[in-house]
Length: 456
Image (tube, rainbow, N blue to C red; front, top):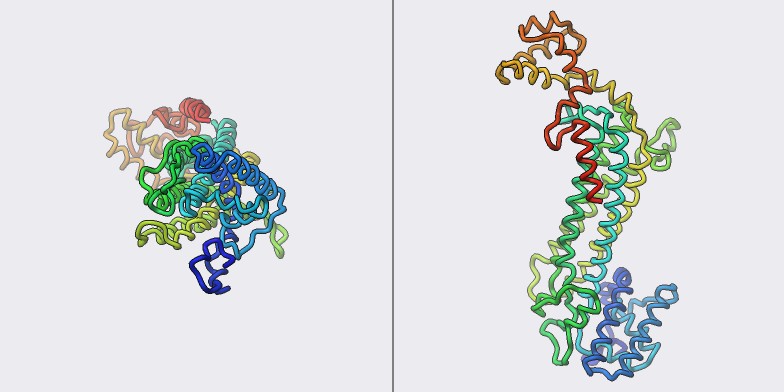
């Protein structure tokens, strides 16, 4: 039989089975990690005396040649060799002959593929952390330029209270900071070595799993061989974190879409991040944030897909686990693309400060401050709340805003009103008055910015 495992079989594999069960179309993305793991494994086999020094050196040289050819694009991966492991072993055999068959001593494809994914996800997690830092940097830079820019703050998508635009942007900074922390923490579980666990029960060869872990810069080895080959928790954890990251990206993208609309006109996205219409020449569509928002479903699907695969699996390895990779690759690629677009899009957007300022003068978002004003003069807040509610209703009936009313009109509702109420109602003062820690006053934002910069 042509298969590396074909000794027990009397018939060739059905071609449909071969095509359906092969994973080389997608797991070839693990080529670098597969060779990396094999180099550590063969070095350990040589050091332990399982292979002679000459055999280990020959295999090591052959693996490096194979990797060089892969990186140069000189290799064609074949479906008949099923997966990346057997494709590379075949390439190695072609390169150095039968001694290549000794590379697989003391290991199985089960612990081999698990090792590949740990190595792959470790590298990609670190890359995504770096990309998150770039997004955070863009948010901090825009925030630093807009400390005094006043934006209507919303609850229920209704005008609530004036806030600094910097304060609003920094809310997303802290979302991404938590995402970074989660990714960093997940590395503790990604950085476990399954290599040497064999198919499920370990091996009879005198291998040194700790040495392999050291060579691959893993923190520790799985203490249970069954768990080592069947564990995909680290991928589920990554996909869970990725789902949160793309959710935060989606929320920010939704705001960018709203703010850039004709109805809001709070920002303008750079032309390089927008597209036009094939029929309406006036259109400038925020396609990038729309698509970032839309990509959320892909990563949610990747997470649910893997959870569904895992929920009914007995120990240890099952072919179902072949379904663990495509979702992981998809989530990594989706996040990578999203974060690489988000940071320059944020950095280049134009903030329309005057439009934001005008917006907060044409609403009742300063109402809470005159309730506070009456409370500081001794009126219980609940009574003050009722008084201001009546004033707002009165102003609405007149088609006016609070700053349009006269002092006499205010006094109709309570005698505690004085001329200083108009100072309290100014949007800048409304914003500046919120000096509690984490508030939207400029002095608090400057402290927050300093803290944010320290996180970078």
